[in-house]
Image (cartoon, rainbow, N blue to C red; front, side, top):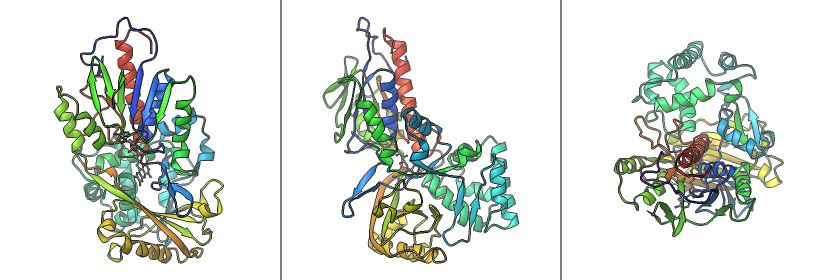
Amino acid sequence: MENLGGRRPRTGAPPGPVKLAVVGGGWAGLSAAIRLKQSGHSVVVYESAATPGGRARRVPWRSLGVDIDNGQHILLGAYAATLGLMDELGLEQEAMFHRMPLSIESADGGFRLKAPRIASPLNLLLGIAGARGMRAGERMSLIAAVARLRLSGWRTSADATVGDWLAETRQSPQMIASFWRPLCVAALNTPVEQASAQVFAHVLRDSLGGRRSATDMLLPRVDLSALWPDQAVRRLVAGPAGSAAWRPSHTVRQLSMGNGRIELDGTSYDAVILAANAASVQTLLTQLPARPGSADYLDMLSAFTYLPIATLTLQLESPWPDPAPMLLLREDPARLQFGQWLFNRKAYAKTPGATEAALLHVVVSDARALLGHGRQAAIPAIIEQVREQTRHRAPMPKVLKQHLIVEKRATFAAVPGLRRPPNSTPWPGIWVAGDWTDTSYPAVLEGAVISGKRAAEALMSAFRGQTPFEV
Ligand SMILES: Cc1cc2nc3c(=O)[nH]c(=O)nc-3n(C[C@H](O)[C@H](O)[C@H](O)COP(=O)(O)OP(=O)(O)OC[C@H]3O[C@@H](n4cnc5c(N)ncnc54)[C@H](O)[C@@H]3O)c2cc1C
């Protein structure tokens, strides 16, 4: 009876699928919609944007006439729910991803950790043993920190930050600067001083605590919408007319309920999944009458704070022949050199055209400092940073054009003690999904996919218990 509140069973209703809606066509919403459709329900997906994928979608770089991503993304072999969903959609992982074993290499050559393709945890041990830029004591502290975390069941104290945990495990300032800091901000988009040690431990558990393949790094070879959201939409609209619908460029503004049904912008549904960002979900839910627990639920939604991510794309005169798909950049904020990771599209894109092959992406997570100094000042400084730090590699061709995308509310800040809402809500017939729900992951793609799947399963199980017909 979960989340159906006081709604009466629709006794006497004709057997058949229930009519459902999903608000939000990001990775969470589409993951939910596919499950619902697979179970034979009629589902309508409303999405504000024209393109599926949400924060992980393709956007046009108009002046260049190419599509790029809303921001460079990286997935892990540990993303079992996402990879499983892609399999179900009939998408071949080899064609979609450039898969490489765990590898962190700095552009300037000062740091390199490459895990060999052997069983876990031996791959990590040998990777650390052969790493460049670490002293013997630092190798031991790194191994000891991960081993201790594993022995504790990947648990840290609930209110500890990653910074506290690094101090407790005696990581050197050099290791923090060259390894832990970039890893933490890349995984949680939150700096070590503020990031939750427990959420970081969950990321380490799912990658380092699993099989070797879980530590693999997966770079999308196609744009993020083409990775699976486009295919999900094709599946949703396939089949008997009216059984599923994709409503792009439609922002849902009104939510109401009455007579055991939910109304979205005047259309009535048996149940809905709100898979928008937490702020939009809050705006919609506040239109509903208060219920027991609803004030606390809304408080959780309003407690999130957000941090930006910037992706600077550079168009080069010709493709950069350097073989590394992904390199770590050393930050130097005093010189406005905010770049953290450099991606060379030529090294991993699927049959790139001439323009796409000549693109580099520079990622700046927690981009508050960049925004504080202004784009005009930061862009040339970051280009100079890339040139300086790759000097000893293949010469980088001239930069012809640049395009900076800043997603101001890229992810919630993964701070200690954050209360995250479950998929069920205090309102009958309404579930939520999104990377911000209580998945234990930080704001990442896998969390979004898992959340969508769980919301759909919770909705279906509630209906199985409540309605007289099989769903
Ligand atoms: C620049 C950047 C880089 C990132 N890098 C990584 C990475 O490397 N690896 C990783 O795993 N994760 C990364 N992430 C995080 C990842 O993109 C998100 O966790 C994931 O996309 C969240 O999906 P979602 O479906 O929960 O939310 P969203 O993608 O935000 O989807 C919500 C959707 O709801 C729509 N919507 C909102 N309100 C309404 C409304 N009222 N009516 C209709 N539609 C509405 C929105 O348009 C949006 O499409 C990154 C994020 C950004 C921004």
